[in-house]
Length: 192
Image (cartoon, rainbow, N blue to C red; front, side):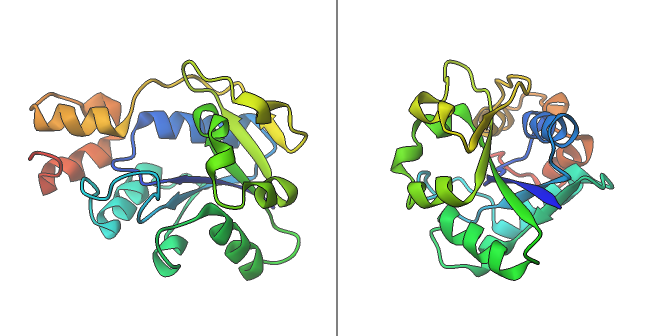
């Protein structure tokens, strides 16, 4: 079993995330994609984050009954802030030896990969599948033998754009799965 780990705060999850995950599940050798909901990204502020259980629920709503997708709250139980290397090693320890984990990231993150905690260890022990981001080619790591550059569709939508649009009372229903939009509306998330 080869599982791609798509880390993110998913604040909120949107169609861009879903298109990338769908592409990687269908057009690479991954058996499934697991959305790993991060309680707190060390590179981002915590102030605008919805509570963890709400973001987890939004991802569950988004993936619905897709058998190729999973959601994980593993980082909720690990020390914070969450560092990818710690999560990768923990998951490897908790699963059978035959299960492979692949890190999924955007080319913008790959360009800054040298700033990640224990990035050399990640490259030594795990493959990285990279989806394109506007204006980013992945930098020096794009040619590394454990890095696979994919041709996933370029998505120029962001969670921060959606949050701002909701605050400005814009209709963003087509930018996220319907169940996610409905839950956000019902709970009045991001309105203030």
